[in-house]
Amino acid sequence: LLADGERGALIGPDGAIDWLCAPAWHDDAVFASLIGGRGVYAVTPRGRYVPGGYYEEGTLIRRSRWITTDGVIECRESLAFPGEAGRLVLLRQLMA
Image 1 (cartoon, rainbow, N blue to C red):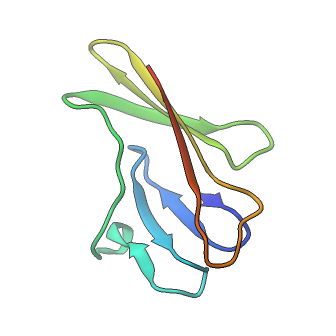
Image 2: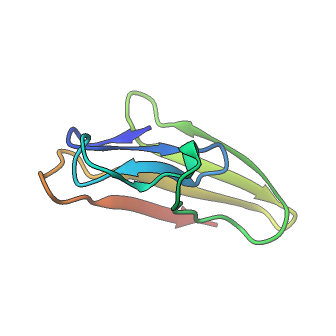
């Protein structure tokens, strides 16, 4: 789960955002693959990988991790907090 007080996003085990409502909690989903709908936002390695991840202690900052045959890739991600009504800011920082 990523959240900013105005909306939320659900991240699957592979690091893809599978569900996101915007601009607010009560609005339609922009990404809805979690429930069989359309749309997903994914940043993943090409080829084979083993996914994983964790939250930084005491935060809603998620670190997705992919182990590939060439190394380890991490993505630090969150929704900017505090959120502004009508404006979603998704932060993603990739480290290889």
